[in-house]
Image (cartoon, rainbow, N blue to C red; front, side):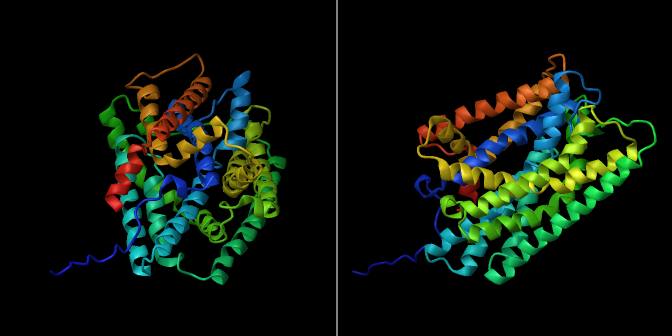
Length: 394
């Protein structure tokens, strides 16, 4: 009797819950709140950065906090974690004996599907999609970065040092612009996005088809943030944050210091506490943008330190981490909620102040997604988006 021997699989299947590290999941789950605060405001104001142009009372505080801690500061966190995840996935496949070509094939397939997910998300729900951009960057990183040696990856550390100097230069230019401000005071205004102001779903869909490609092209530059995540993952910093406390403290202080100080002047304008002309507002906006990328490593390091200090997993920590394990589903769920609750052709909720509406809706949606993710984790269910992606890839 002849025994048929089947060839071994050239890759491992999706990661199991027991194989996950807490820090990456907690970071993703918590930072979805900031993503929600940014995107819900864009929907509510039908433009970017999604702030009240003539703030009063609490609106001043909301504008100030959003411009200091959220805008251009939340998505770089996910860029860091995306790079980190690429290395984790590749390492896991290699540990199972997968060949280099098999690992590359899995990563290219996964990132190709991310591009498809992003195109559907941007067409149906929200032009400001990042999934497609992650897919494009993921393919570039798979082909050009992942299989490089440690010396090569030190380049990215040098690039970030140069970025610090560039932010300092932008800061000097902004100070000069403020000092030379002589024209009439120019409030911070939102750049309109037609798809968010469209009066019908069909019109919004057509507008998104025009807006999405431009948005995706404009954010591909975050590959430098993704590369930093690759560097960190190679050192397994978040798998054992307690062993890297000194590094994490330094990155948290420097990263958050730069991102907060860089966003502070524009936040003062947005809150109505600093009055400068349009040229100065443009200079402060640019400073806020270039300093925002440091929020990525800064927030990641801060959460790494938090995990290193945890002595037990409380219910809130487990619930937020459960959302982090289902971050793509949580992200897409948010877009559905913005469309249903805030679009002009759906419920178009307004509670007297657009700023209040955006903040309250974002917090409510995030809490709902945390509760839902924890309920799914208790029953052993993955998020629907993650389940579909895994089936397509594996």
